[in-house]
Length: 241
Image 1 (cartoon, rainbow, N blue to C red):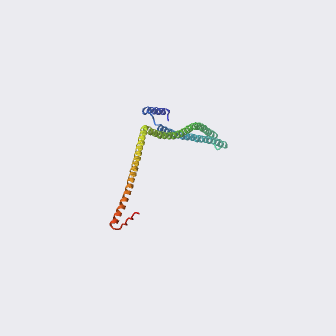
Image 2 (cartoon, rainbow, N blue to C red; image 1 turned 60 degrees about the horizontal axis):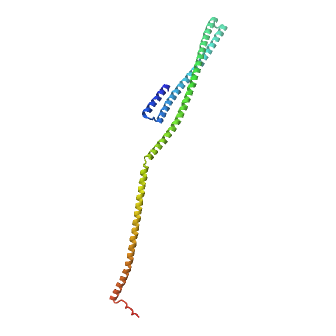
Image 3 (cartoon, rainbow, N blue to C red; image 1 turned 30 degrees about the horizontal axis):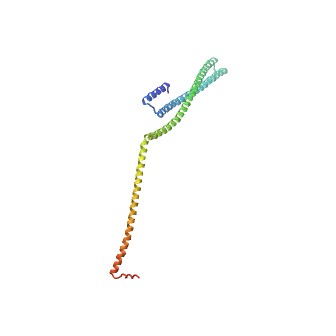
């Protein structure tokens, strides 16, 4: 990415931060990673193109050197044919000179192609270093983003818990508990009081019943004796000595 574009993005981020009070660092980091990945894709594409040009220059240099050698061999063959009498010496010299000229031209082109190859290979090496640096930066930022997300999650959870704790009315809660304790104590005392009253009432009733049971027994015996006498079944009382 162009350095001016990056500065513009930084300026935009600062402006938005001033407006919004606080930018989401996770979103900003994710956007920066997307930008870096785009830069990496462009760098890889450029690296591939430069390497392709270096390969093409190397092939061209090899081709020009091969043609130069071929023209040199042709010049030798022309001179050999003239020496054997198969070709006029003047014609052989002219054609051999042309072949040597072509050889020189191809050697020059081979040299130029070789120089281009070196330049492209140097550029490719520099681009490869940039690519490796981008990969390392992306990997580092991805790790930092994971840490940042984890810290944000913990911070959000802690903030929620602290907010809930801060909203609790501790004094009101304590007062409510005290009122509940007091109410329970009153209820317990009242229950115990009713228990004592019930126990006292039961004891009095038992005493009354006991006294009545004694009187009822004497009356029953008297009634029984009277009935026996009426029926003539009673035993006469023994005279006292």
